Length: 100
Image (cartoon, rainbow, N blue to C red; front, side, top):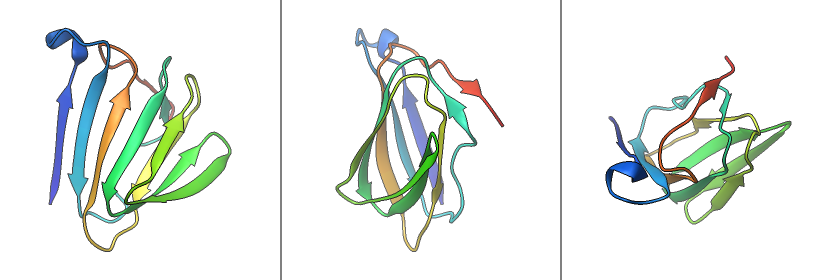
């Protein structure tokens, strides 16, 4: 199961955009990329391994991870179970530079 919903703030008069992510597919996640604004991950349940710049960090339920503007990042779902999170982009629309 994999489900993702994207909301761009400019469509609803907000200065932020949001991705609601829910998946139980181990290893899934976006490839390396960056944004010209900060991105905040609020993990509701499950676990994922985040690469943020040169560092790796495992995030789980209740964790909040912040990726500064311009820093390359990606994550991969670790399992078992469902990874569910809200990804908050500090922009009224998504701007992504894919690096791999």
